[in-house]
Length: 145
Image (cartoon, rainbow, N blue to C red):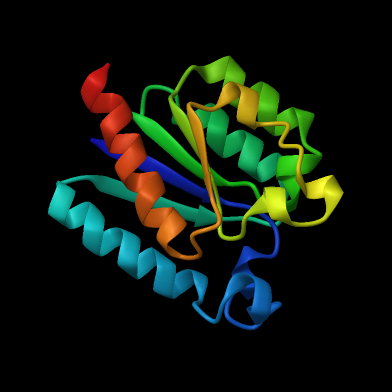
C-alpha cells in the first residue's frame, strides 16, 4: 500500500511558527514519526510539502493510479482553495484531511473547510499525533473497501 502525505503552506516552519498553537515539533520530526508507524503497518509513504497551491494540485492529480490514499494537511488552503477541493474530487483517491490544531475551536474563518466535503474524514486537534491518526485512517479506509 502506498500513501501520499501532502503538506500545505507554512508547515515547513513547524517548530518555530506559533509554537503555542502548533507545538515545537518540526515537520521533519513528524515525518520521522509517520515513517516509523508506516513501517510497522508495512505501508510505503511519499511525504511532501509545498507553499504553492498549484504544486499541491499537480501532486493530487498525479496520485491517481500511484497511491491508494492521500493524507493532506492543506493548512491555510483548507479554507480557501476550490482548486484543491476540485482536484481531490476529480481523482477519486480516498483522502483524509488532517490538522494539528482544532480548526473548529479557532478563528471563525478557520471553521469552514472547503476540502472536507470531498474527503473521507477529518482529523484535527491532536497535534503531531493527527498525522499518525491520519495514516491509520487511510489504511483503515482501504482495508474496508
